[in-house]
Image (cartoon, rainbow, N blue to C red):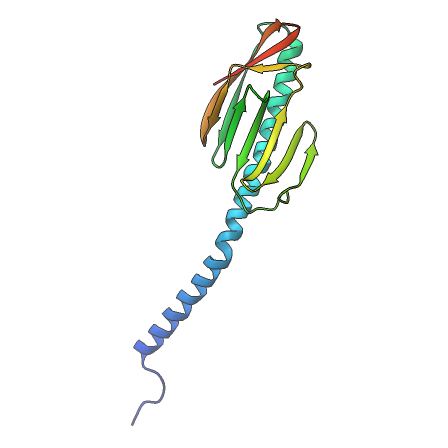
Length: 165
């Protein structure tokens, strides 16, 4: 009697091909979505950190000269740009996430979120008449950093806050 149907080897090859196709489609569609979600989470973490840092700077400013507070910064994506020239700290990440549309900006408390052709940025800046951030001009890449926020006193009628790593 002749067997009707497909041999087990052909069935295995077909099932394997279908499984590979399904996995390929899921990865092709899912991976960019996962990357955008990771970038969105990184932006939210930067907002949280810069909010905490802003509160720490205020606390140190009010506590008086030579007061110091340690802050730990831990991140996996993007970079933090500390700029004495701009009297600001900025988190930047190259992303296709649409937390903020390119060319747009929005303010969240003391922070400004904006996007340009280079990515999405979270900006924390100070008016020099309020206080001067001093002691840094560097870019921090993913990792763990122990920062010290210190009140260095008043220089030229400006309160000077040092942020050191």
